[in-house]
Image (cartoon, rainbow, N blue to C red; front, side):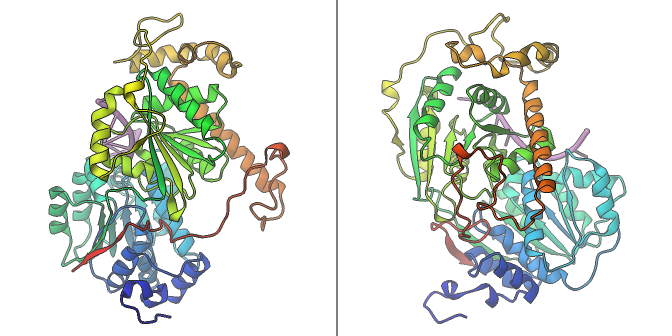
Length: 517
DNA sequence: AAAAAAT
């Protein structure tokens, strides 16, 4: 029911947008009544078959703004073998998987074939789904083109094309692929195009591939939401200093900390920090793009489900991932690009909750910190004194233990071989008890092993959840009341409140519609 | 100074 108010947007409910009863019912079941600005702006036009140019970040409810109208439009007609009816392109595998989850959630009243085409997993199942005829095809560009070249896929039946996170695709060098894909799809299609920013290359792309698009823009204040407490933390610049700083911080925050994402700038740092945290008995997982895909999925799932308290991640996890209720974000490294800072800390303080972010900064990070402060328009407070009081530890570049020269540049290949040889003996001390060995000296575990650890962990968890499913005949098991017994009683996890807050990606308060043409 | 993505 919409009552008259001065601002139309506030009065809107989902039932005002023209969505089908099936879709509305799924939305209602999910607990949502009010569309976000991007949803309110885009859905009616998308339903009419118009092209939409949505300028919005993740975190604005953008995903549902194309999923819901697509579901409504898909109710007429059916898919033919190898000819998907719709195609959604995503820059990362995790985002693609997340979009699939949205189609499953809101498409529960529909009988749709959904296919997810991403790299790192086998072709077999993907081939089968294509062969069966996909109503919804969600893909990362590389794997999509691979399937096409193998003749498993025809794109000339695509009625709706979604290009999501276009500016990020640009960063990742996907634009030529995107252009190729766009050219394979008949121009009679409808195109829904989303980008957080509009650099010239992206504008060019929209001019080429969109027809008279409706432009819906949601402004993101470059400032982070006010419900996130931000602090800078001084640290010496040596890796072991930073790790110590982080551990101290984690311990100090322990009481308030439900779960945390710890961002590093580089994959190798993710690996190293992950290993280090395991050695110090932190309940940590890792996520970066060089990890085995199954481990990636499992780590993310475990973190979402509360089976892991800490997730050490590269920027693959910075944008778009919808993990509700992350209490803390730690930046182990100051991000080099200021916008990444906003994305990273935006993983906490979701749906109006409060969140805390700590950014570890060293002397050499000053200019990046400055850039961030310029971007967000405020100074970030220091947690415990600024860098003028920091003490740099002495010592060589990388302390070592019975090993050759400092291992830094150009280590990759020859060290991988070493790693394999040494793995056996090094396994032994992985779970070594804490001792007085300086942190740095514990850090010499081979990088290649991280994927292993991740995998083993993932495998264990997969087995465990499989057993749980078999073990409990009760599939109406409530989270919270009926927790598996293996949750140690003395260490009962604080229950999450399952209340639904906001819609999907949810809209931070600092966003609003600024333009609609 | 990076990360991401087909193999």
